[in-house]
Length: 262
Image 1: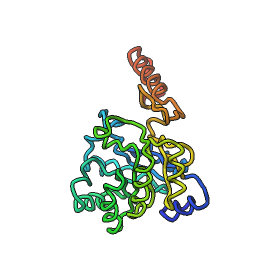
Image 2: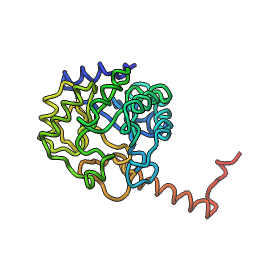
Image 3: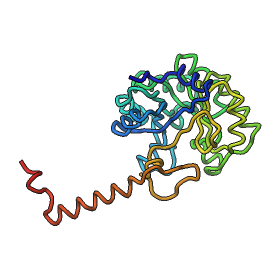
Image 4: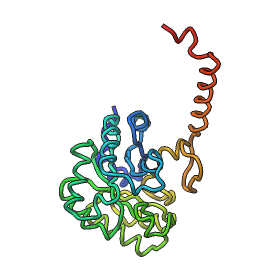
């Protein structure tokens, strides 16, 4: 049986140049499939606000909702590391609240680590959470919780600021950092400069690992598909086809057939 993924596992993978595979999950059935498929990190992302709850951004997601979904995912996971995403205003208001909320992910939801967005501005928060014994994954570049401040979901190109943020996050004690919406060349420089793993999303092939939103990968979402997304399936088409067939068979009396009856 494959060993449980730990911080040591991820550090060893970076040193050996082995790619880290990360993916989001929000419920038991999908988390079980993701875990059994060989993914190293399962992020219970606040992206659930958009792909599960139908919100236009991640901002409305609450701590209680994140704990609920993370607990479900943790139950299904045996090998991958489960990371709980700290939602908007769960860590921005103060370090004491941040440490307390981060602790809930481990104590109540069974996660191994937490993720929070921001660079230098949250370095003291990352340090405090880490010193409390809670592993922290950083997240720099395009940070969705700051969508209004950034004026939309825009690629981040300020190399000096991005490099400074990455180094600050590492110095504060983060075990890895997500690089989102960053030009490939800049992401490579950051990856080469850090001793901790970088996990890219829209940051090119040179990161130590990659992450996508599960619903994007499986084609469960409709409408705009971001440039950095590759759809490996089109489950929404198959699901609609199956549901329409069910509706038709119920209405025509074809279902349930004799074999479906007791």
